[in-house]
Image (cartoon, rainbow, N blue to C red; front, side):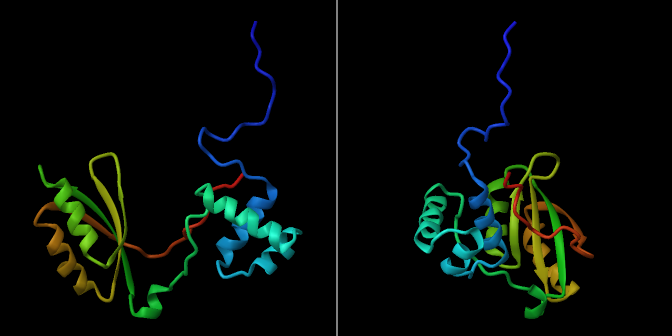
Length: 161
């Protein structure tokens, strides 16, 4: 009888191995991407040069893909948020993808499995704006729209363990 040694679950193939310090750095940067290396070093108990080297390694491994700012769309006058399911008409898949890319109110879009090919999020100044935007899409696709009432789980990091 072959028995596998009892070991902790390994990271999936191709995944960068993270230790506790890496996880603390990533969590801190997710909270404040503007944190200085000195602040991060103090938080994780390393020197600034060691912390800088870890950050460079995480960037080189593709774990850190960039540093960004989080904007509140309401402060810019976007009072509504909608989720749009998009099902391209036959032969229109790539054209619909291009249309979605060109409409700046679509802030993210995922290609998915199932009846719909895309699920997209957009921000609106008014409900009237929704018809104007969807008219550009419905020439090539069927859509189903839901207005977002609240976001009980905002975008966050995946588990780092």
